[in-house]
Length: 299
Image (cartoon, rainbow, N blue to C red; front, side, top):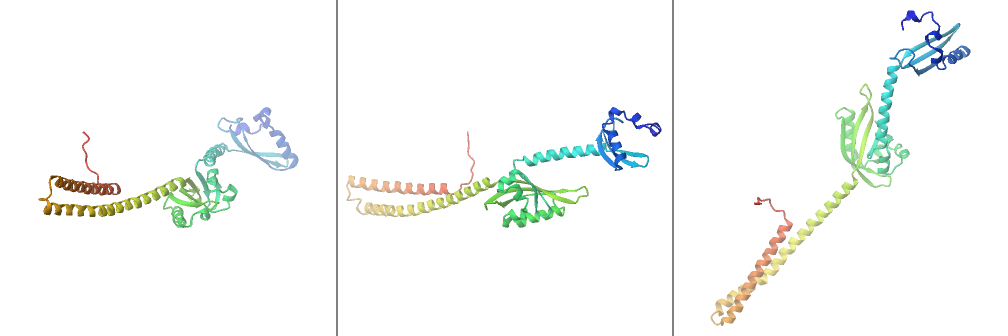
């Protein structure tokens, strides 16, 4: 509305009485109390483009002075920020993994339920602590080095495996993902961390490693046993074969057909036993040592 159309008119002519809410009562109150009144309100009285106004009413000697400022753009931005905050809050609080906000000196000031459950602290207890306090000592130096790189702008985020110490003193293995929140002038504000519990995976890996170690020991013992057994068993067989050969060479002419048959059977059995022992030893080596890959025909 042009200024020329406003000057000289009564307020009630510009704003219908049924559209002013309780403006008149507020204006009367300013006159009666002599105190400045200020408020923000939504309206569609003036133009379609203005939906929020901030008005200030100042008492004068002969009336009041009213100033109004269009704050629609600011209110729209506040609404967008509020919606973003609500989405972030829902994602933060209900996340299935641990999440926290940490000050630049390491103090927790926002933590979610998943993190509290993971390490056994209540929210009230955890926000009294620093991440340095609950980090396993051997992992702290690496973590702090990454933090420093974030603050110096050398990294935008970092990921690492590390250990927390729970309230009960247990080791909790985690994958930690950290980024740095900054203000519009690019100054650091706080750290945003996501924490995934990988303790079960680490426990399984440790169990697998123990089984692998036990299997290696068992295989070595089996190979040692097979070697010793084959040596101890082959020695008497060699003697049987040696004495059998001597017997045949010296007395083969005096042995009858039946005696030669017995001698042949004895030597054949000794040979088969020697082959069997050698095959068992080869089999033990196959099962305890990796074999190279070879090409095979599938047709």
